[in-house]
Image (cartoon, rainbow, N blue to C red):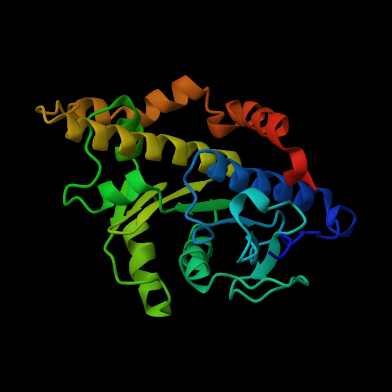
Length: 258
């Protein structure tokens, strides 16, 4: 039996700005948290973050590493066309960056774009009505939710304008028959948005499995959901939960920081 491969990436901390290093640490943490919460799909989804101070440079996972292996130094820096700007033995997932490049190019307010194929999310994305307003979690998503129809594996540039048009100014996107996507002004916001999105989908699947009639939340409540969210989070968004999430990771394995 062959010995397992040992991953050893030279530290990037002294080779990038402090702002980029912090983005790398946060993005590596985000990948680890996705794995920790069981939303990863082996190596086949992706999270991107804009390099601070740039419009056309991004960080993405090295295609081939499991999400619980990703570190700040192993992340790959790319341009808007997906070309690598750093030395890395790993390629970039072409389908991953087709989706992300389209969104980053048109939503300059989004530092982070997070996409997963969670079982609950894909299950709801295959339902004609999509996400139903049946839980407190769902109202925050439904008030800023868009849908994009499935066009096959996202490899074609001609899909980008349709995806961007469907997303509009929303922060949650359900890719039909495919999965979930969230945007955030920070990496923390994108992660917490996904936490709520996935929770809403899981609740829906379990409620439907119960077989009883579902109670829908009135549209009058949905209309005020964003204001309610700002009240609950004190407009801090994901940053309220992020320090605790990092402490959780540090207790388990702090190597994402390297």
